[in-house]
Length: 205
Image (cartoon, rainbow, N blue to C red):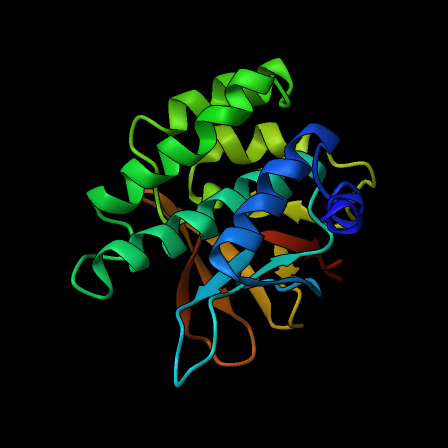
């Protein structure tokens, strides 16, 4: 256990590591620090054909984002243990478990004040991902150690051309409700892109 605590402390606030380590031991979960994935920050896989619970969290998250994502996935584990697949993935059962599992970290005050305030607001109705809550996402990004080469869709002017991390190139159009309408230049097709999607500006002639 001490060695595992030491490993986790590289990715999350040190005071939080013993609690998460105990969760891993108690649930016999296979916990993996994963490479960066643009589509998700972490994931949970329920036991299948004799395997154990599996959780992975992206390695490049700042310590506070790493911890919150970890709690998010353990809330899935706890919900599955209680209800299997009889409830919605992010229904009231998961929301209650997420709030309960976050409680000890609030007591330990392992999060900065601004993250704590944003997280408390988010927890009024936690969603599928912390990325879907603009206030929490922006607050967490302020604590990134390394500045990203990416900027967000919402921060560039309308008609700007940009590329996603996968290389697809778009032109930003008008905002429709919560997302921006964007045209993929190679196909002329339109897509709705989240305002905090990270993009690379593409110079135009």
